[in-house]
Figure: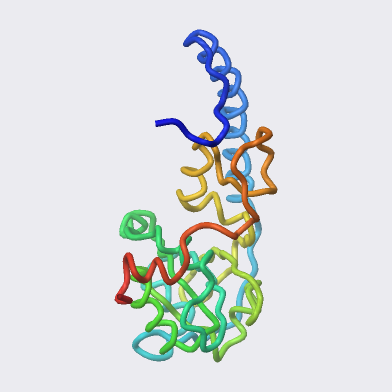
Length: 229
């Protein structure tokens, strides 16, 4: 079956292997640079945090107890629009990929979602879209704002270390810095047409659309995975 989209040049196998080898030199260099970045990340200093209280499905909980006995914690700060039935599709889609997190137990770590929305709304939304992570609310706390994700603003990821009841903030990222933590963008980026977004450097004629104008919506995630019919 032919396609209306332009196609990459067709070459013999030897030429293809040569060009792939050239690309892999850059890919391997990028991998080594990511290793070096991770090494620098492990050497970052940290900052001691005050005591925060979040809301869980079972009521108020100290940040130190969100670790659930572990020494390390990652939080994803989910964007929240008060009262909206369907929240940010980017956050909803990105977090939906984490269906198995038990492997983190071997690393003495936990990964949870924190949102500025009320816990009742957050838990209802979690069920609506079929999310399998543990959710907490910082609606009655400055935690979200202090961690780079204030109400009405964007999303963020933070990492923490616990020593007894004392919690330290060790790392933060937002925007496209979150991409490396999941598989969604990595899989799409190896496709011949990539993300097909207009900001990307693609050959002339490649299918492209406005950034964030395509992709699965929160409502579609609910239909596929959640309680939403």
